[in-house]
Image (cartoon, rainbow over all chains, first blue to last red; front, side):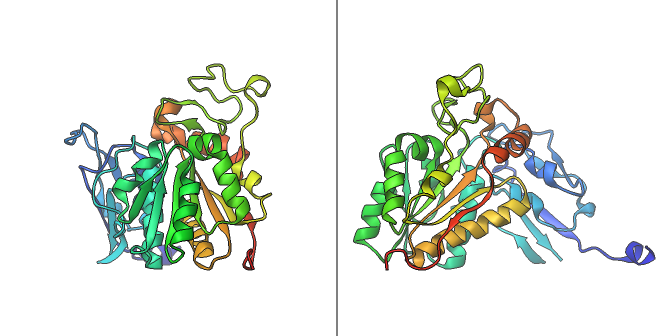
Length: 78
Length: 250
């Protein structure tokens, strides 16, 4: 248990293209660490896009990008 | 930083024109990824049909032909027979492949044509406004079956993969869904196997992709994915329906 607490998780970076996103929320549904949320401002097409709300929680698993039907998300880990 | 996920090269960088939550974009991204991995982007020809799936020609950076409703496998047959070194695939919806185009797909499979078909099954006619399709599951409400599909007057849903598995020419048939990362990885492996079946000249290959249609199902994108997992997958079981080794024409 102690080892688990001191274990360092990799940190990830999620970039969401605000103009590609249509706010379907499938990425928010699949994210295991509740990193993503919906923006309160709409994009040029009129959708409320997904945004990174708590970037520090992200470990770069890439699930959000995997399920994104718009291919609006890129994920980096390091 | 290491790249975990980026847009595949074969997918043109422009926003999809599909409704929010539609899995057409996801399916096209996976096809683009597989084309990238196999390095066949310069010798691939796709055939688009009629319906929402036709828009694939805007998004994949390969050559495309658009066909009449349901006739994509016939056109793909002609292209493949005249240019056998090219990789030819058709990308069709359920209203196209399982309704008006049943004859074409059945005989293409039966002849063992060296083409691959990707079949997006969303259980309704999407582009025309959500009418009942042959693949609509029992009790599902559509604009032309407002009380739900019932077998006495509407018949039973068509399981196309199982129908085609009876054809001797079909070398690889598989059914996949794209609702979570595990299933997406399985789908990618299936699509790769289908294209490899064609490249190795083994016979006809088809991958059926279950997809939600939130607009015509009258659901939010998240509800639609849940409904697909709960109602559609039990009727359309996932997995490889038929895998035949060896070259069928030999």
